[in-house]
Image (cartoon, rainbow, N blue to C red):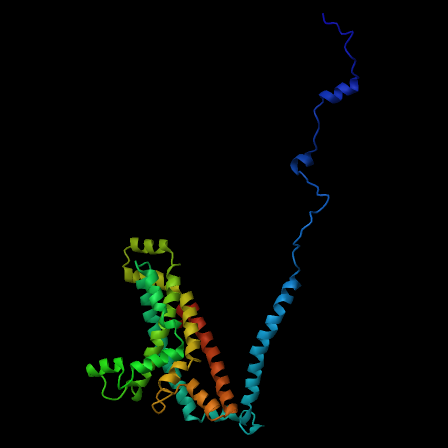
Length: 332
């Protein structure tokens, strides 16, 4: 038998506490809570939203000044008869006279003709070049080579092509004359060919921009859709029109809007090449605006033409966006 006389006596309540399982609250087991007595200090506390507004406020004010002030000044000038000697208030008389100005109407016709042909050729050639360059062996070299004309200033490009079109020593003139297409007169000196020559320069310089944008869009075309369509027996041409081209609509919209706005405001190369001639064969509306405002110093009349050009550009831009966002509605 074990002698328990010398063992220390443990109180009953203490023994119970030693061998009793600790009870846990259901809430503690289900939702453990951590209490943070003090939030750690941060050396870079998050800035309030108004802080970022204060940072952007000077830039916003400068951009608003250089954008809004000329716009309202343009409206103010268009309501006056302004020249070197001064100006007087004439109201909407400048706008009324535009409807009876044959040079203004002819400038619109030539501008629309010039823009439509340039956009059509640049879109067609640009997308075709993008398809050829895409995933080719020399893609990087071809992209770099195609972008070289776009890196040239428009005035310099116009001067370059002016030398190539020259009737005395122009290389392109010599080729066209050798083929019997041209006579002794330069292509820029004939009213029936001057617009074609200007369009060729614009297509040469700005088609690479559409090629670059379309090439970026081709990289995003889903491969699974192309492969599934080819499994169904679609030819590569049908695959392009049914899968690739619809996926290119968003990027083509950007390209068309950029080139559309450029054609409506860029006159650098055209002034170098023809200056609006021969006669009025290439006198598109921006060239006529330049002559009215800066050659004849009719600033009020020029402001009215500029404001009309701006409004029509915005309206046509909206139409182009709607057509490209929903191509089916544009064809219906």
